[in-house]
Amino acid sequence: MKMMQKISFNCKEATLLALQKEEKQLSFLVRLKLAVHVATCRYCKWFLKESKQMDGAMYKLDQSLFEHPIHFLSEEKKVLIKNQLDNFS
Amino acid sequence: MALQPEKWLTNYGDYLFSLAMVKTNNKETAEDLVQDCFFSAIKSKESFRGESSERTWLVSILNNKIIDYYRKKSVLKNTDSYLVDTEQAFMDNFFQNNNFSDAHWNKEAFGTSWSSKADDELNESEFQRVLLFCLAKLPPKLSCVFTSKFIDDQDSDSVCKELGLSSSNFWVIIHRAKLAMRGCLQKNWL
Image (cartoon, rainbow over all chains, first blue to last red; front, top):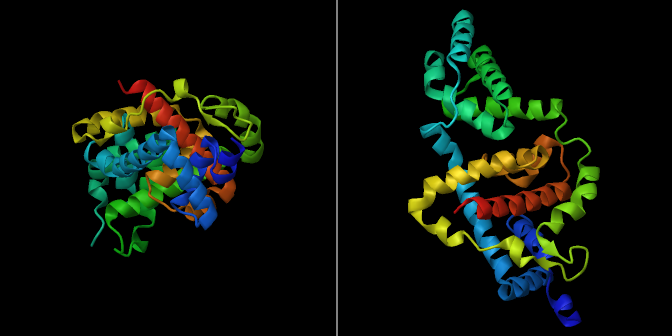
């Protein structure tokens, strides 16, 4: 058990580091310990896969909301904004 | 490339409102932000150089208004103490032996992985629906950072600068947001 702790991280550490790894430079030893953990822990492996899938879905949100808005300005607000813009022009 | 203010409301009104709603979860706030955005935009239309598209330009004005709103509401005030005070309770939802060196996933809490469902393109709109549902449930301190990073596709340094956040707090927040989001998706995506 103590051996495992020395050569890999626990799940809480591993999930945090795996997210940081995308942007931060982690040392070789940290990356190695992370890889050891992920190779032997299916929950963390799944978490990382799910994390990437969330990233992709989040990134698509902007275009999706542009093509298909999900919230709509009230007519009153639209009139207010239109008047404001018209008065300025 | 010229601006067309007479078409802004039609072309971008609901889009910007939807973005503001996702980022603030408050209808009145989001409406005011969109109104302020359009008003700012028309006042500064001469400064538009055409380096970006009209849409991108309007979104950047909106995002600046949203950041001002976060600052005004002190959403990220006392982040240090908030994170310290809530660490135990938050992490206990996901990990066993949380405070110890062998902290590991709580299997019951993890449930099953939804990743194979997410891979299926046919589920894309459903995935998005549940994603938005879960985003709305995130605490404001987590959601403002999470949406700034992942909807706007910004690097962490830019987000930290914008929100006045330290790098270490940023990563703690993103970690928590991801844990909460994947858990919510697992519970709500049947």
